Every structure is written in C-alpha cells, then in structure tokens.
Length: 457
Ligand SMILES: [Zn+2]
Ligand SMILES: [Zn+2]
Image (cartoon, rainbow, N blue to C red; front, side):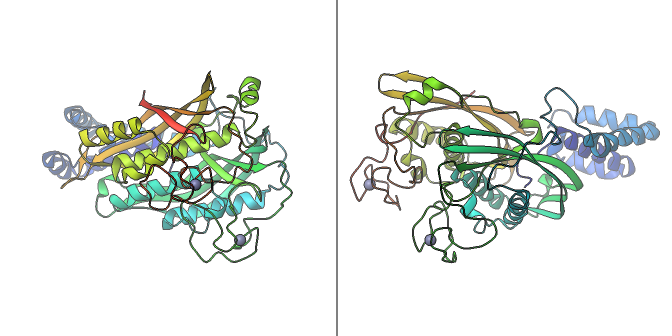
C-alpha cells in the first residue's frame, strides 16, 4: 500500500521533469506561469516563480546540463535506491529473525496483496477481519479524503521480492512481530477533478515494515488469511464489517489477536526504527498489572485510532465520533479549532509512526504520553480548490491518554470507542453521555482510556 509514501527525491525528480518539459515547450511554461496557481503542487510554492524561471532560462542555455541533471536523478531513483546506506537505515532484511509460531511468508504475502487490492478499490471489507482498529481507521479516514478530492491510487504489476522478520518481542500477553516486505509495483495516484496532485511511479521498488500482533496465551490456532469465514463459528462473512470487526453470526471479535496474527501497523522504510520504548518498563507494568491486556503496541494502536478520528472530525466527519473517547473540554477545543479554520481536507494523510514516549502516575490516575508523527497537505475545497500547505508537511502531535490504574480488564474484548467498556453494548448512534443499556458513562477514566490532551508541536 502506498498510502504512506511521499519521497522528496521523487518530488525533486518530478520538478526537474517539469523543468525538462518546459525546455521543450517554452510556450506552455508561459501559459502555466501566466495562469498562476496552475504550476502544480511540487514546486514548493508561489514566490519561487522567478527562481524557477531563472533556472529554466539557464537550462535553456545549457540543455546538455539539463540532461546530466536528469541522469543524476535517474541514477538516484532507480540505481542507488537498491543499496541501503546511511546511519538511520533499519537493519537489513538479510539479518532475518525466525518467523514466530503461526506467522509465515504465505500469510504475509496474502495480507500484503489483499491490502493493495483493498486500498486501490477503497474497500476494506475483505481485509477487515485481520486489521487492527487503528489500522482500519488509518485506511478508511484516508479513503474519505481521497473521495473528497476524487482521487484513486492504481497499483499494478505488484511483485514481492523479499519477506523477512526483523524483530519479535513479547509484551504482556502479546507477541509483536515486525516484518520487512520488499516489492516492486507500478504506482499511480490520480484525480480527474484535481489532476495537479497526480503522481506516477512506474516500476517503483521499496521496503515497508509491517507489524503484526498476536496473543501469547491463546489456544486458538486459526488461519484468518486463507478463507472468508469466521474463525470462531465458521460462518461465511456476508455482512460487511465496518468500525467493529465482529462476526454477525456468533458475535466474536475476529481481530482481537486471539485467533491469528493481526496487522497493526505499516511503517515506511525511512520511518522505521527498532522498538525500544516502554515495552520493558517494569514500573508501568506493575502499575497496570490488573489490566491483563495492556501492551505498548495496543496503546499505540488506540492512539492512531483516536488520531485518525480526530483528523476526520477536523475535516469532514461528525463531532460525535470524538465524544466517545474525549472529555467535554477536548471536544469543545476541537470544535473551536474546526470553526476557526476554513473547511479543508487532506491531500494525503498518513501516520509516519506512533510512539508511547512517557507516562506519569498521579494518585489513582495513569497518564500516557504518545507522539504521533504525521504527514499531510491541507487543501481547501470550498467552492474552488485552494492549496493551504505548499508542500507535504510532517508534524508531531502529542496526545495524553488517562485512566485509573486499577481498572480490571479481564476480557480485552470490547472495541475502543465503539462499545461500552462496562457492558459491551455497541454505541450505535448515541450522542448521549451514558450507555443506553447499562447507563455507564461513555467517557470515564475509571473505566477506559480517555483523551485528556491533544496538541500540535
Ligand atoms: Zn462467527
Ligand atoms: Zn453499557
């Protein structure tokens, strides 16, 4: 899936290609320049027009130099890319770790190809049963943005060239595995409505890191990847699963990681680093020992789930969504933020990574601090298209999640922000402050994690 991918090198190549085209058709450039704002999203914006004009004139005088520039770009894009260098480069896939039990290259390949298919069709129904809720929100909120801009991402000639496990850890009742997937594909991101955002990468090759999670103590050994049936009752999935991945027949939660490995995160090559974080923090573990289902990866999944819902609310979604996990103060602050800005959507919106960076214990309360690194470009589509960010922006957002430390979580089976953590009833269309079945408060730190802070850094 290419939703998490925007490389500066590709953008530079595109810019230079635009320049090269301009060499051949100077009249077109005059029209483009004259049209103002039709210059395309790559250039890094207005204001630089005269600089680019100078560059064009210089290159016009020296066409041979232009060809050398293009050769350099081609070298970096297609030849140099194959060799991993630099200090930030993650461990090479060749130093592979053994596959943990129940996970194998077949499942990975099936999952990889199925997600590409779901992504380009903008339909997650077939992959839902083995997607974490955070992963589901990452994909579907972006579908909403793409729909608003008439965009689609066509992927073809997909070929997986290598699959290798790079790390496995145990965190509480869960096992977490990071798998490097290398591949080539033709990748074309297009919109008929707003072609200025179009991007095309034929024969693109890259490596992504896919993180899978599974419960350790579970005796269920089912395969979620080779069939379309419920892992518990065997009924075929006829009903589309949406926000909640429960079987319509037996009501089991298919993506609880009790049955099989569940996809919880996709990280781009440049953003991946080995997890250290707070997985091994014994004080945190001790504080939350009554919560048998606490794990860092799960909290990071909840954080990405929350974050994507916030982004949805800030753009096209209903405020109702965040009233299920945020207190009144945060809800009002988000509403105000939305009111102040002119209506916008994201042209691309992907989470680079989520990290549980710190925590604090205040009396009975545990506060978790999570950093979400995100990349996007905002555009206003009120009447006509207006680009708010001249280029893709990468920003850090910090979130604080609070909960009582002695919450006794025995089942780990309710869906965060969609089901009552007290009785398990689904929050259908409620805007009520209390569960319509058991009357438990929807947002309550003595029951569940509550978003108590949210700020851009
Ligand atoms: Zn079932
Ligand atoms: Zn309830």
